Image (cartoon, rainbow, N blue to C red):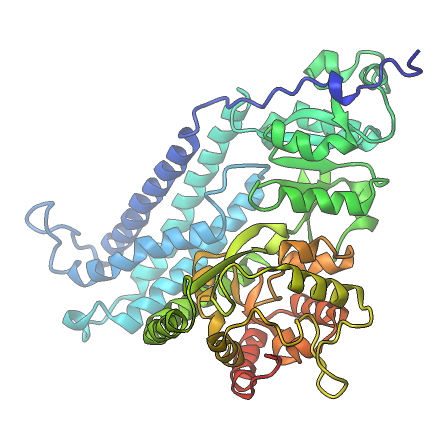
Length: 527
């Protein structure tokens, strides 16, 4: 006889995917409507500021033409609306999922309006309305009034939007499907707070058992025998081993962890498997502060302090700056180097049969897999087993990992690799084979600077601390390349990657880019 008949086993769990309360097009439509309203309000605020300061009409003889007095400001108004929208988006005012507070909303609105006004002033006095109004003297009072009016109007509007959102959430709409991992007091407190406060934006779908508590014990424990399942329909849906499957099957978007006894290796694996592609957030309850990684963010959901685990170890501003620089550099490089691409493609086609382009599955940030593009340097259909064996030796740090010699060591490479073509050796020596990775940078899979993108079978051999290098997008070049590239043992390369991640700055990226060029000329590490 089963000693614990009430314990929920995997076969007893009936998985019912979380259904949408409204059609999928509703939320995108709401965001679009708010964005359109912001566009209209941005122009009206600017036009009102002009009218109050200059006491002149905005329109001419009809509503289809501007007045002569407003015409120079109309040239500036072209920039006012997009600047306002970009600043609102940057402050995440169009994010309508999860918890919010009116105070935080006001602060974000204030920052967006203030920085937007500063950009508008800068653009105005640099651009000066174009060639036609280069000698026109703009009134500073108009821009000051625009800031004041915009601050009042947008604060009222966005707080009203949040108020409407809280009313909608009381109808069980716009709530994030959430799993609670743990069956302790912290789990009970979390479930109670989220169940009683639907305005916070979370719908607890179920509980994941972590310490052997049975379904019947959970329903009656520490709640006067009434049981949460009876009150809110919340029940244990599986055990810790079921967590990855439950996230997928139930359409979970948020996982709140309340049990500090969860093995860190398992938690990390689950986060990696869910990854960015699944858009799953992981949060830690208060009792797990001693488990926090270095890159975290403390937030408050109702009365509950929560720790959000960063899936990218950069602030919003840093992430925007790095992505902006990636797009600019990759776009310009692809355009300028297009003749080189054509020449390399012709050389490859003339040297050996097969496509000139080679794509290989690599592991990016948070374990998300993507196709990495390179110019083909090997024979078509080359066997990967040689490289797999060489890199496994490198990761394990065993004898034979060095395919070079004591004076010029080379790690992670195959000695005298028979798969490499004649043209391929030239491309590798000059690093031209990596030019197509600019496409990966442009579409967002990679960055110009970052850790080396590993192959999935390499990641399978990683220790837990090795996987921290997946906390940032992989790069075409990196600190590892300018520090010795293939002359470094695997553990040394990982330490360099972690140093880069923890000490990232745009100036560090620029320095690495400048140091990469001499390294390419010298052909370092290309054996």
